[in-house]
Image 1 (cartoon, rainbow, N blue to C red):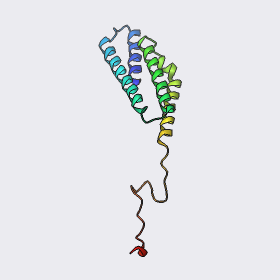
Image 2 (cartoon, rainbow, N blue to C red):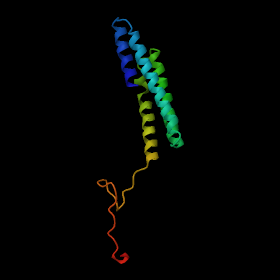
Image 3 (tube, rainbow, N blue to C red):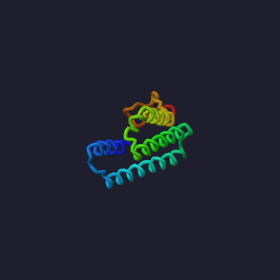
Image 4 (tube, one colour):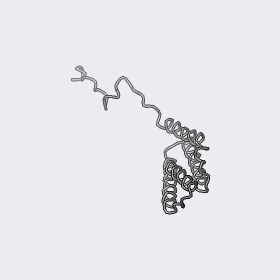
Length: 129
């Protein structure tokens, strides 16, 4: 999204300065955007196998919003990203929250710590010898 937005911001400035459109760059950036959104949608499909509905819903809503912003940018609405930034960040935050719920915090017990990979074994019981 940032690459697409940045390209169209410089494109806007170039057009305002009377410079010609950079069609080859526009095609390359557009292809990169399409590939990225397709990869994200593929990731949503894969995560659907292991994640709950909240995660999938959040990811799909983010994807739809991002694609909509991308379409507006490519149609010449150069400020589409800035106008949608609040919603964009909110949807991104929804994904982060859903991922955190999916992963659940790791419980630290008396037998473990962040500094050791495995619990310390109990000493052998002399009565079992």
